[in-house]
Length: 172
Image (cartoon, rainbow, N blue to C red; front, side):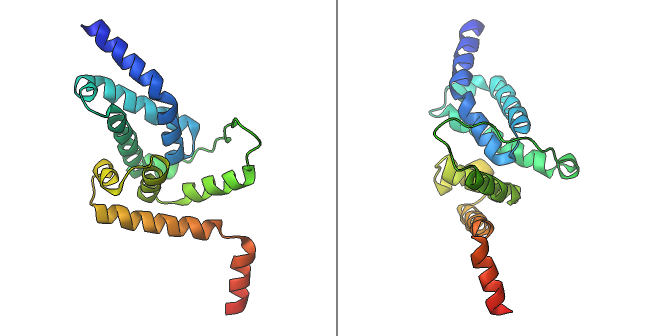
């Protein structure tokens, strides 16, 4: 029985590992930390695999573990003292706009952890407000306000420089 449980768990993890890593990277903006988050999530998933395997959507369960672990890590004093910078990963595909990707990643990284988690869950993972509230352990209203604040911050961070300078000159 344990052998089939382990086989089922391994197949599940192998199939979802790339997606979990991408979600973790979007949250922490560092591939090494993303791998650490995923490792913690997979370990916790293994200990509760019997319950998770019986769920309709076990990928949502493990994604919740990743998000919550990210928020826990951000609350610890270690993450506030130490910031590790990593190179951006090589991306596949036809010549992406690297400048735009860097701008978006920098703007996303500048968001507070809960706003970042909300934005990633709502727009990258395409979850509805109620599911995001369940993952983050808050109300739907909090999700909506965190999403609005996060999007507003992203818009301001991604405004073209000429718009920002033009507004400053007109007010000055």
